[in-house]
Every structure is written in structure tokens, then in C-alpha cells.
Image (cartoon, rainbow, N blue to C red):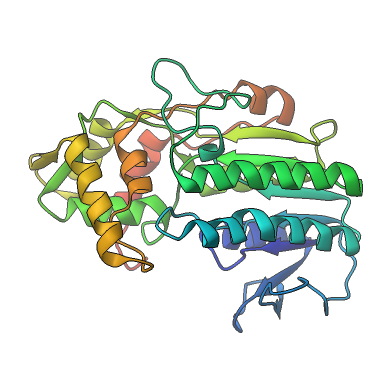
Length: 315
């Protein structure tokens, strides 16, 4: 089976492309600059004008992992990538003969603050941030065009993805813990994270499962965990003291706003989106993904985080 993976040089996309190749798929990966991806066939693509205009292979499944994942960019830039480009990509997928389109979105499309109950797929709590709004709009574009073009679309909404120490959430947490800072907010906020290999499992299920087309699924780990628990486990593993500076939520948002203003179009060290991720409780309902998609995440964050922090940084 022939598949195409966009965003294959990114964190999730690279793991997905390599897994697909290992399982015997013929994997094509568009890249902006020359780069080899183990077991895959890469080709140059700048995503300008008409994507894949010079790509002549017929494919069966199109995995779309491309999108801006930050809120510091201008509204125009966010919309261009997370909405406008998404329409161009599914139109290109149709021309390439794809029968199914797996679209990687984000739980930000439905909201980040779970408050008293886990957030379900059909909730619309909003985020108050441009990133979440564009992810929701991108979903609507892809689902609408999918029905019009008669290509089966499945939308996956992962929470914050973690994996090796050098990638994703783990690297950010490690860098914070090497400073005097220990907590933003009360520490009782819930972080419902998901391991990158569990997200890859969900992608494979979404590519072949029957009767799940034109639906969205929350993709989360098996167990939510409090921020206090994460810091405690990490500090114990790293041999650090679990005592240090705690910043109230209101102050954190003020700092994040100042950082975005000062850094302008450049990526700030701390953004309002990151602040919301750290300060708010975000727990998501897993029922639909388990029952309809057959998704059964295997990696508990409470167990994985200890082994990740005990892994040498260079590995």
C-alpha cells in the first residue's frame, strides 16, 4: 500500500513515517529541504501554489501532520497554514487517488480547560486563542471538502505529545526543571498527555477502520496526571530538589504576553498558548476513541516519565 505523510520531519510525522515503513508500507514524504527519512522516499515540496503538482504517484492513504503548533504567529500566518493550506492538501490528496485522509488536528479545537468533567469530541469550549480557532476551522474545511470530493476523512485530536527526552514535551519540562522554577499555577491542574507511539497507533487505526469516516476523535493517554505529580517524579529521577519558585497563573499570563510582544514574529521562550497548557486542567473523554476507533493507549505517563528522565540527554 502506498501512503504519503506530510510533516514527516516533525516530531509526530517522523515517528509515523518510520513506523509505516517498518510495517511494509511504501511511504512518500514531502520535505522542504533535502533530508533522508529511514525507509521512506522523500521529495522536495514547498507547499506553495498547488501542492504536489510534480508528484506523479498514486497513493491509497494521505496522512496530514502539517500545521503550526504555536500561538505567537500572526493571525494571517496561522490561518494560512492551519486553514487555507489544509484545503489545498485534501484537494491534492484527491488528485493523487487517496481513498482515505487522516487529518491530525488538536484538542485545542474543542477547548483546553476541562474544569469539572472530561471534554468530549462534540464540545465547543473555545480557547480564546487564535491557534485553537484555526485548528477548528481547519477541521471544518477538511471535513467539508472530504464529503464534496468523496474522500474519507478521519480527524484525530491528540493532546500534548511526549516521547524521547530530546523531543516534544519532555525537553521543555527538563529545561524548566534545570532552573529555579518549579510550578506555574497551583500544581493541581491535570495534564492529560499522550505518548507519540500511541498517537502513531491511532493513525494506523484511522487509516483502515471502517465506519469512522467524517468523525473526530480525542487521542489521549490512559491516565491523566497532575502537574505536581509530574514535577515530583521528574525531580526524583533527576536528583533535583522539589522546591523552588512557584508563579501564580495571573503573573504567568502577564509574562507570556510580554514575551510575545518583545519577541514579535520570532518564537518566544514562553507564549500564552504554552501558559494555558501549563496552567489549566485539560482532561479529555476517551470513550469514543476506544469504542469506535478501537484505540487503546498502552503507555502511562506516570510510568513513562520516570524512564524518560533517567535516559541520558544525548540519547
